[in-house]
Amino acid sequence: MTAGRIAGRVIVALAAAVLIVAAGVAWYAFSGRYSIAATEPHPPALEAAIDEIYHASVARQAAGIEAPALDRERAAAGAPIYAAECAMCHGVPEADREAWAEGLYPLPPHLPEDGTDLAAEEIFWIIREGVKFTSMPSYRHALSDEEIWSVTALVERLHGMTAEAYEELIALPAEEPGAGDAGDAEADAGDPGNG
Image (cartoon, rainbow, N blue to C red; front, side, top):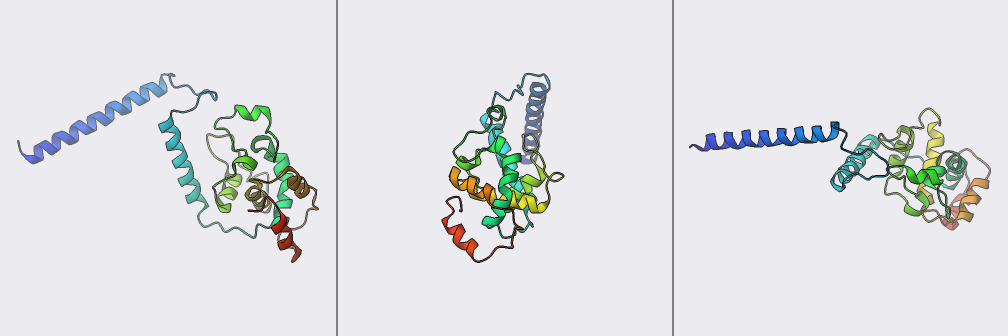
């Protein structure tokens, strides 16, 4: 048998194996045997694949977005929005999220405890566009880009922030982001959530 014929048979065998596996996966998925219950996690391999797809997609979609200055005053402008729109799922410093949010799958990160490894531009994109197959909605029609940047500024500071620092941010008067003075740098240095 020639090398060409052997290679041809190997290719046919591999193609047949792929088709058999694909047919088995389709049968399993469409037969109702795969549980879609939020109380049952995905198999680890699927979970890892979804995580890789998520991070790759967010990075690609956020490419080209430029973040404005995300200073303390912008974070203060985002604090009341976060409290009203985000805290129920993502939590606030030193407090649990709403009990019903524990039933979401995937479970949203408790941002004050878990933080995020995402860049500011990626956080902005996620808030603006939302994420399919999660409980993260798009805020593109509910918030202006300026408001989304303000929430982004807060999210960047939340990890490790104390409840007292969070309450101070919420209590600050709303100012137009970017219109601060030299005192903001000093305030940023003392902000435990600044990071």
